[in-house]
Image (cartoon, rainbow, N blue to C red; front, top):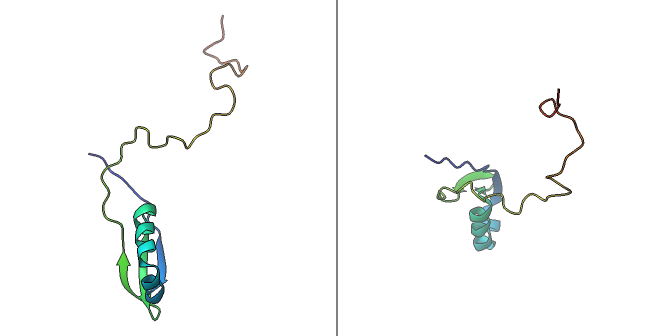
Length: 86
């Protein structure tokens, strides 16, 4: 069983602004996995949420996120108890 959690932050937006930018906002909700609460005269009237996504493989999901700086294989010069010779 694979569980996927998204940090869904709600953003309030007026109905008029939603109407003006509807297509862009739909793409943004899908891409950023956020929730839009559409308001009319300050009262929430609708909620736009992304559809359930298929499970994402953890293998390779962070590719390109980390940057290696320096030598990650060589010794740090630190003497570890496991390396100490009697």
